Length: 158
Length: 114
Image (tube, rainbow over all chains, first blue to last red; front, side):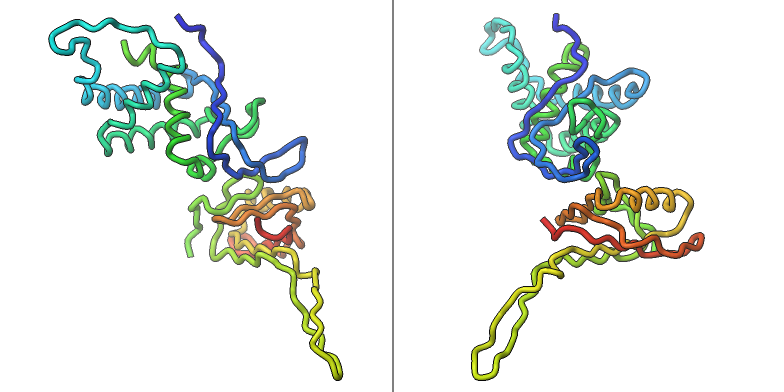
């Protein structure tokens, strides 16, 4: 069982220009790392439930991919490394139904803006909606996949 | 005109709701042509225009007054982003006369757009 982390860092491949306060000085920064806090039940219960439901519906629509049986033969269930798990989630997201995926991404972005995504490791400077929309699709996908892998997958896939 | 909150105006990373049209002068060096008697025109540069000017229309409320008072007190320690243009070291020119619910213009001068 994975140790429960309090936060994770996700490096993005296309840095975004954001307003940043460094030691009291306001300036712009090419941000290449997003800091993500673990959710809490008090503030995020409803939205995490909605996201879980959307994610499960998306996964069910791809149920053939998760079949343990191919050609009638049982397949060995492989324990994935963290990196393989993230990659697996990313690959699965890319083949989900377009409308469902967009709806899930929108809900996830809404979630990230609720004191989850930050620009600094001391979690004082929140990422805002404008800055979140500067992320390119690959980086957003990486952030979502990393977050699901670390904080959600164990409870969502029960 | 309604108060707009498209999220396209940020000051120090905070989205600002404005009421009207944001005016931007991105700033650049001015090329000055100096004619000479019996000679070619000599071009020089005037760097005094190499600064940005951002005019933001805001509806006066106690909240907006507090917000912009803080920005004034920051001196030039403000960053402004409007759509695809970013301006650093922005200082508010002055605090305008404010009447409740009226729309006033806050003017900032800063570094040229990046």
